[in-house]
Length: 254
Image (cartoon, rainbow, N blue to C red; front, side, top):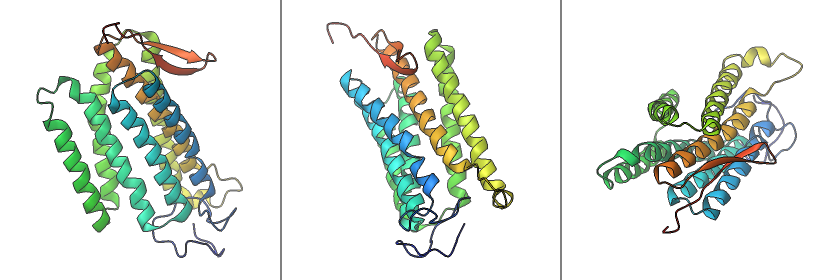
């Protein structure tokens, strides 16, 4: 939503969202869409500390770091509304989904080196292509397909998990992604109507917040399932009775 306020970043060169530009600062184009990535950044940092402290497999540390990179990329994109920063937001989104696919499917993959090699080359090829070509709606379709590829495996993990608290994490994952999608669609499809309202519900910013929690719940659930596969006796415990994380007890031989 363009306006007449001068900006530090120059003319807008990327798609805009349903928030007035440069209302609070000439350095931040979409204020709420920028700061709404902070919860994702904090939650990913918490997950990373837990993964490192309990010595989970490196894949989970990389996953949490990818969440942080995505949050930072999204902040830069919405703060500047520049084409290059948009790529810095969208490319990590694809990389993150490739990581989820690897974590979900690798335990039953018989040829261990082929999957990470293929996913790495796929991610690199996408980054190069995305730097050259404007995908537009094609990017959204591509991202949705990658998300859909994760669902059957997540469901399999869910039905093979007996722990009530772990199942609750999976339900929270489903709830947050469903609510987030509704907020994203509402903001995108009804922006013209929202623009005439006295109060903007900031649907895209709510999408960021909900997806930050969604990533954390997904990561925590997957950490539980993987620890269970490895015989690490995982438990979902709650910090201050509210905040869930996985606590493991490895065999002494490990």
